[in-house]
Image (cartoon, rainbow over all chains, first blue to last red; front, side, top):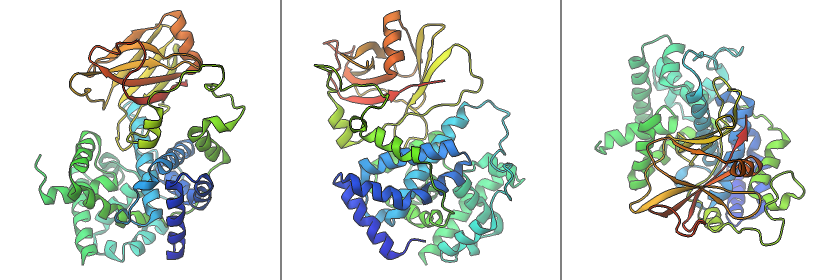
Length: 184
Length: 235
């Protein structure tokens, strides 16, 4: 997790980028591109797509740095959110072009340990101040799989071997419960 | 659909998480534009869920990622790159809406190389006209050398404002843009390319869409704002 000092530094860089400071932009890239690429790669499981998402995200950051404000979260999570949305967009526009019958599970069957590895599960628990622990296991896994792996309801239903209506309600109710806990 | 606070709460969470998709996602993006209350709800989740992203294992992107970002943002300063030399030559055409586009940045442009399910032999250029924060592309573009035609299929494109039309242009490497006509929204737009326009397009691979008075530009050159610029890719 980024420390406060680091967030302050990123904030300074973002302000400089809003003034079209290219050097600051490059420093920003050096500082966060590793984390951003890691996130996109995790989500997409495709290097080429993740690379494109990082490029698009930085182009957007260059143009929109001035629109950042603290209600949108810490600078790092704001930038990672941009990259995450971009990755999801790219994943969908490509998937839409695929023919039906393609494996929905390609992301799972990539030889890794499973749809959601243990380190991510525990990271999620720590970051959301323990609130994820209050959810049922199915709710928590559905939310984390959607967040980290970009799963659709269909993919969740297949991965978790449960009807689509059920996984939809795990996600929905899980999120509401999460919000109640975070607001406490 | 009514914006009750329960709905806003539920949809914002699913929007940020990513499980809200397709038309529902686009509808919700309109809500976001209309209401600060909706945006604040989205920001709440971006803030909270954003922390999840910070714990992921880092991975160093290849150097080409940075050079491509530089190339896209500052094509002029990249020196002798093989990119179209739009700044060479005397009296080159100045992009009328470019500064508007670059600074206002209401629309962030990007081009997606779309994977074709079964690449057809004759299809050569392909791409999409996309808008940031929309999950679907506005139009999908494909050029078929065999049929000598360019086809734009609307996906998320919406009709131009009242009394206006979208006009499609080829932006050549050099010289004035060439109109490919006014595009109806709702149907696929197909235009037959003659040899000359085909040559221009296969060289610059750049299309633009401008907003023009109904019926198209009265002057033969773009008069309204340039809404989109898209680069096509060879498949």
